[in-house]
Length: 106
Image 1: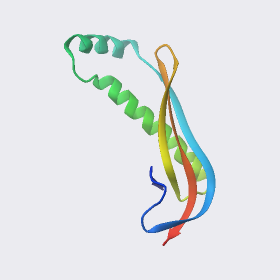
Image 2: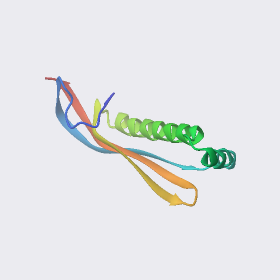
Image 3: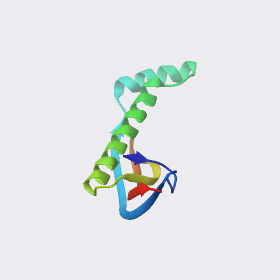
């Protein structure tokens, strides 16, 4: 499945718009990661544990969006956007959404 933040896909044309698809996940911080993050905060630098957790969260949300599009028998998802929002102390939602479409070669 083609997934793109663009409205168009080079070499293809949209023949049918199937509708909005999305995927999300909510992740909470982990005490062990918080301890490492606090230590990193003292010396500076990237907090790899959080970077990895957020990357995994984005992939999980994207996989759920693709499953939603597959259910609609889409060929592609265009206009894809990510959003992050605070849910509660120590937890955040990752949301990804886009338009599921049918495409054919131009």
